Amino acid sequence: MIDKKFNFQQLMTKFGTLLALALIFIFFSVFVQGFVNPRNLINIIRQIALLTIIAEGFTMCLIVDELDLSFANVASLTGVIVAGFIFSGMNPFLAIIITLLIGGSFGFGAGLLVAKVGIPSLITTLATGIIATGFIYAYTKGVSLYGEMPESFLALGRGSVGPIPSLVIIMAIIIIVAHLFVNNMKIGKYLQATGSNKIATKLAGINTDKYIIIALTLSSLGAAFTGILLTSKLGAANPEGASGFMMDTFAAALLGMTVLNKGRGNPFGTFIGALMIGILNNGMTLAGAPYYMQDITKGAIIILSVTITSLQAKRLEAK
Image (cartoon, rainbow, N blue to C red; front, side):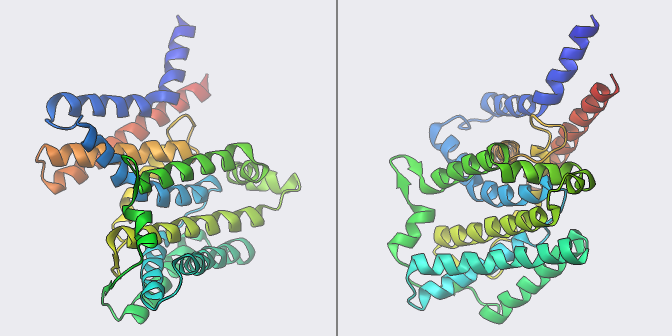
């Protein structure tokens, strides 16, 4: 009897969030007309592509037990920068590379301040996010950027391979690479060790400062790439184009920490978190729910899911 109870608790701890996702999907499939239409399902995956990509970067910070509050600002900045480069006639590939370097420099600089100076990542990235916003308005004067863009650049955000949108393909590649990076490479294992116990990891001879810097840089690179893809998708750039990613990214990554792990960030879990948010947004929109109800429901489900999983984990640890 004890073994069965233990196994049930262990099962819920590991798969509780996946079960919640399945139940939500089944609910909308049964009660919302058109939800399971293949076009709609593809649309859900397309809608969460950018959210997943930016959240995978943010997850790297969670893995080392740090926070990044600048990712949405960095994404907005890189979105307008790449647009400006392309409208000025720069080669799209070169524009993307330079923009990624600019975006990544924010995370690298923040990482140095956190690791070498000792400023908390919460304060550091809040400040770098404000700086990024200042650069946005200095660059755009508060005006959206419009113009003609090369088809090769627009294909990143608007193209497709057969029935599969290019954004979905890019998202899948990012998820797979992030998963292999974190779980199968030495650098990923050191990131996890740094987040689990910085002091013990440092005593083991591992340079934890280095991995904090890497994590924050990867977060900014993920944000920068998202900003580039957003501009490609829209064919234009808005000074606050990526601001809407802030809360959903937090939700996706934090919800992902309850998937298959006990409170640790992981790339696959982040995708599941983004998928849950995408399904909720789409299903409630099709059901005609008011926008505020979508926010209330998402928040409640996230809290409930995290609470149940955390309680189950504590019970298992007490055994």
